[in-house]
Length: 107
Length: 121
Image (cartoon, rainbow over all chains, first blue to last red; front, side, top):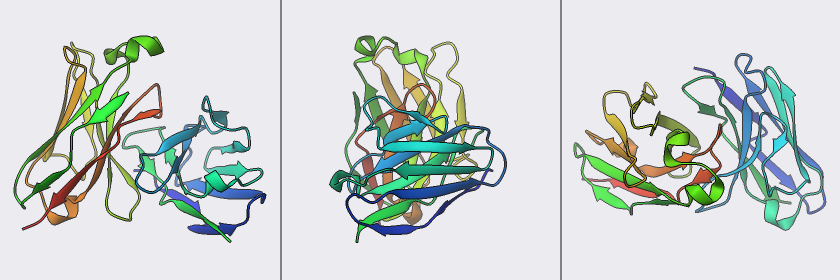
């Protein structure tokens, strides 16, 4: 199975900050990586697929980059609605696997 | 729209069957059979884990399961009602979790609201 490792596990930031989350795969997954946002008590929401393509309706302050084994999710200017947990997920091969999550908290 | 069945409270060793009704496909320009339906597990306070998938194409019905659940899980899809099912057998306390179904082209964009399964003696 492909292991996905996110860092950091928790991120404390203020409204307006630029924040980045890193996701590393245990082997190359080309660009078959997705990012999700999850708020407490809610289902995950797809933000980005194929490493850098923004899902329809997702604000442009979200962006993704990377290929192979290293990927980054960046929020250019953190908004109050962005405080949540973020997961990366590889869909290069089955079983699909997720990172352990990064909780973005208010500083 | 993806609507799941309600919460379940059950005992160790029992079987649970969750449903996942998918509608509004025609508005989005595709059919129930077009995309795989995936199921994910999320234990309380933990991350997401992929359980498996079912191909709802009627002539196919292909399934792929994560090794952790192989032998205890069965996923099916009924194209006549647009509903997918996941049956999990021989439940254990560590199966207590929220279970999500999800579908879409590639990584799923349409998710159900989740169904909480609690396994308790």
